[in-house]
Image (cartoon, rainbow, N blue to C red; front, side, top):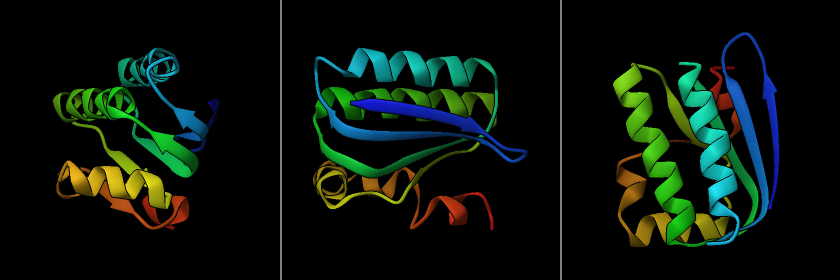
Length: 108
């Protein structure tokens, strides 16, 4: 898994690529929690994620819950088909705010 974080005037964007599995999920969780502590709006670009397991999903759920507590936005954007299938199976596609693109998530 590779993580690239960027910041613009609207949100922090965290772009993930590769596989998000039990071995990689602690790295994802740490990156997300650091952003949550900054109380900024977060967009997670999942367009290049080839695989995600329950531990990766758990990290996203934890960040989403923290964003709700903080009153900040947490948006999943450009979700790849493998991620979409996992979210649908867990019915989390009804919980998360999901945008078709990063630009859409940023309101542009």
